[in-house]
Length: 377
Image (cartoon, rainbow, N blue to C red; front, side, top):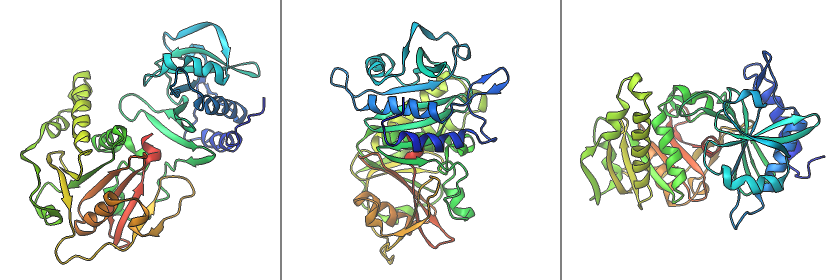
């Protein structure tokens, strides 16, 4: 049937083009060939998932992850004896059983029809995934590999608004210093080479939903204190260095389940203190120095008048805006701090889910604000 969700068809055409790129060759590998979903299949999956997202089961909005793959390309799935039509009603009913992260409903074709055939926790490389995050909000991903950052985001659908993720970071101005500062926040494709812990912190800050501000300052020196109103109520002495100690472990140790679990708990703990009113302060080497710090303009500095705004989505063009257009006090304080402390980063999570990374751009001679929530969903 033709999709009734107005955003399904335009999104499907754009995603089909992305999946057809030789650099990606996405889709389950059957008989030595990849079989990405065509536009009709993509539109059908998006349509069913969108309408399911607006329903409720026992008073709760569904969270669903749909993976496009055939039965023979996953290990030990929970396979349905009778495959179900891909329909919002069935998705809503099944949602409570697959609400936990990492569980996917398998979708595949039966002739011209799309069917739900399983629940599974294992997916092959390059498998497209359609995830319902909240009512009217959907993320289309693909599986890259094992471990953290194993999914790359392709697109985000919010209502009828479509954003295709820019994996080449073409939306960023050509400025080596800025690219270095934002390393890992350009696009999901860069995460494999990035400092994963900073990305994890961003995801955890966004997940707690209370909003937060994290300042990342150089290891050496105390210049950052010139931009903080003293005394800092929650100053930490000596600096909390357990996360820093874990990060310096050998590559073999970092592969262990124990290391992954300990790192996750510490990242969540550090992200948690960003919810306290004020800013948390972290060094480049992940030592926590303080939280609840109040930012003030450095003596002799000028107020921030303009910042450059970008977003890692296809078609985005840099805009010069007033920092007040980005949000409230947190955004203004973050922009001022980076303006005064140009070797630092500021990460701002909003309660509405927006996430902005502030860095100094020496090429433009101004603060650069990079909106990255499309990467963190």
